[in-house]
Image (cartoon, rainbow, N blue to C red; front, top):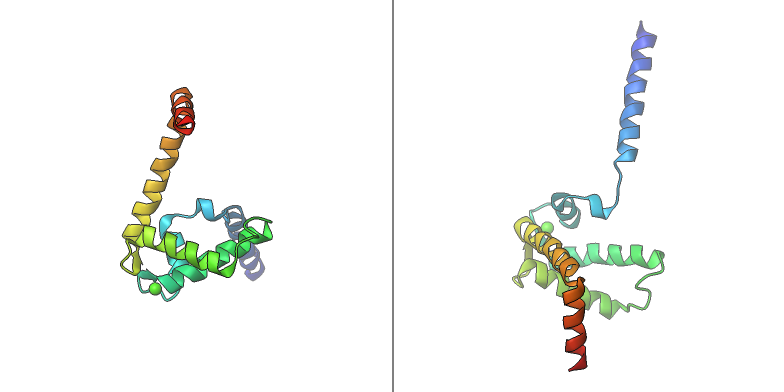
Length: 132
Ligand SMILES: [Ca+2]
């Protein structure tokens, strides 16, 4: 009886592990809450510029492992991080979950805009602009 209980517990643990493995996904599949929690290393509900930079550096390191962004200097990274941080956090030195949500929602909208602009009309307009 004891053995059966142990075996089924192991089976449950195993299926749980499988589900977790399937679920690991990438950054893209993370909710804004998860991304925010990851950046907010001291979990006080606010991401500071220093916290943001830390997570940004991690992201850059990941990209560089993939062979991208390899020409970025430390200054570039700090500069871009500050840039993103100010864009997301509204230049008040703190990024809240609300601000992060707004930023990601805006980014989604921009993607939609771009998809529309990639149509015929958008192409023509862009060419005209370039000719000027
Ligand atoms: Ca924090």
